[in-house]
Length: 335
Ligand code: SF4
Image (cartoon, rainbow, N blue to C red; front, side, top):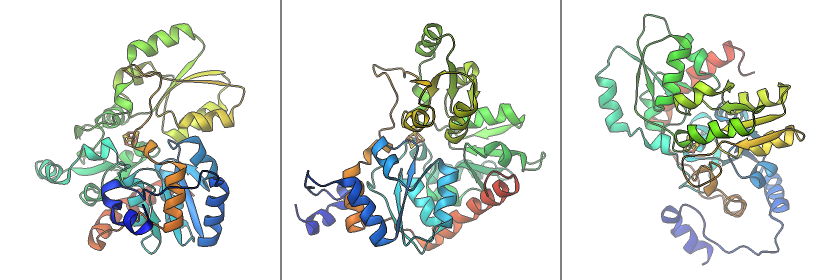
């Protein structure tokens, strides 16, 4: 297939389906393209190790959003899922934002379609809508404040105590926050396919086999998993905990991509992926893992697929993200 045909098929395939010379050093090529095009490569912790190793910045949703907003690069290459690249475009619209595979979606974002969510919101007209950043631009535009798992508690605490709250789209994170902050919340019934299938039974058995191992869990996990966790936090908070803690062994209940940074930062410690409720030993996000080094190289080479947004939608979606950034800065969560 040539480039013209590949471009024609890009929406159907999600990426440029072109052959790459197997002898090409993709790491060197990606570095070259970054310099030539003044591009910055932002990668989420859940990306495959090769992509993390070639990224300029690796982070969670909050850190990545801040980097995307601040960068002076002409091109932002986002190795993550669609809503993350879309958030980068919302925050920095004059930049060209590229995503290696447009089909890298998110089951959590998909669990909140705009039409039903608007109807849900209309049933609770006096509520403040707090939405987790893992949602589409349409849901952001219907929200008052966005949050990430790293700042969610501070965001909830910033809302006057007499104001009722709708939390969307993740019911597990919402329930966790409600318990932590003591605030009643109306929860949208969404969940992440990766975090909701950890097996309580298998984790309990793993804990018996590794009695010194601490269980580290992301708040998108279901309540029974969070109830037995030694630490609950965002990906960045989990990474910091593993580094500062005096223990040596950890069971990690979040997407397995994070293990790469954990092991790199703590070469003498042992990290065991928490097993899901199926025949697999670990839990990969199929959306995150759609991005590959090959697709990344092609998207940087040909500057496609690109994130294109309706300007009014972008402006409406930006307001609640700006609010989140203000609260996060005031709370000292970002610089
Ligand atoms: S891990 Fe869950 S929330 Fe994150 S991108 Fe994958 S499906 Fe979405």
